[in-house]
Image (cartoon, rainbow, N blue to C red; front, side):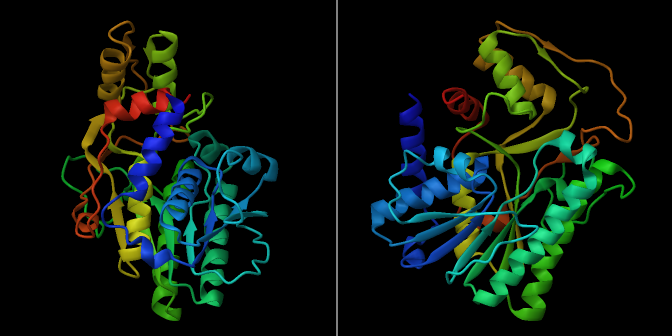
Length: 347
């Protein structure tokens, strides 16, 4: 089942409409965050398409842990198409090969890390992104894509669709804001490098993304719900669960990333989400209890007032407008129920 899920996803990515694979023929792609959930799926998708279409693509992945990277991709038929550089974006090692495209996805993702290490969260984002943009400038790349987050919109409280041009509602004195505020600054760095130096920078604002490859010990809410369903344990919410947001399947995120990288407009941002997944945290918990655990577990909702240093973002309704990326030909295909089933099959 696990092999089937991965194989299906790779075939789906390589067959996606809106991606002109010929543009990558003979190119070298530099990827940061290559051992993360999204980055590793991007690499696997590129390698699969490379073998399928004989593209002669070279992938260079920046990784912190070489052993982990080799273990993660040991079953991949990469040949000489994939190589690793050990280091971090904050102190970027020398990249000696000529790079044609860059996908910058290196970023902390755990909310607890944000509140325990806010300074490091900011430094990784801002210094790392500046280093990547300098690399893009030096190589005169054909495209560089920054992976941002829907959290940059802050905490709107209506269900109105959120356009890419909308401002944000973020409290700059709340420690957890280090993550979305630093993401916003990185977006502006991309726009600024595009304007001042002609670097072809683009931004994609991803909804919360999950699917195959999520580890059993992942601390994010979707993984917690999945574990509860697998272990037949009641779901104990840590908040009242009224925040609403969209979600995105990993393979759909990869097709969105490659679509924007190759077809997006320089200096612009693109929302990427599956509009059919828009729901509250408690509604998602109820879906898992009912459709994944087949009503064998219950959902318990507490009454909690979050303090200013909470690891959780403030109450929000993040209903993203995806019409801009739709104009590039991209469409998501996997809904919330199937996202859970396919993730659990690989946990």
